[in-house]
Image (cartoon, rainbow, N blue to C red; front, side, top):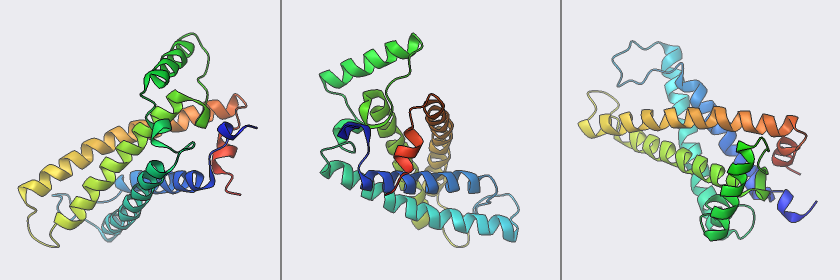
Length: 193
């Protein structure tokens, strides 16, 4: 196995942290009710909101550390892997898309430029959701009517969450497809040894 077929340990831990926090955030969002909402709240839906706030702050910490790691890294977690937009990267992405259109799976994980770009876009979406959530954490009053700016940030947060839901389903589906094609992507990503 060459060094391009395995992610480094920090990247695997950061990916696990993002996978857990984003999944929890998406699932909790289905049952929570914000105090700023006009919908009636129960102790359960309010507890969901509190969990969403605190897990969201942890997700913000993880995406911040991930960006710092990607800026510092020169390997499989580097910005060049997450956004392979130089001439060679664009050429590889085009070739991998042509392969997909003819029925061949693009290389997964640290080997593929398309996979790197997809991960980069997912990190950008998770970052946007975490940042807008962090803004709401600071902006939403504990009682009373939220400001117009807080409403706008909340609307943007909701819009981004729709993109993250779409990304989440697609990412999980592609990981499973690669796994069942005996690519062993899941084991390689979540083996934390």
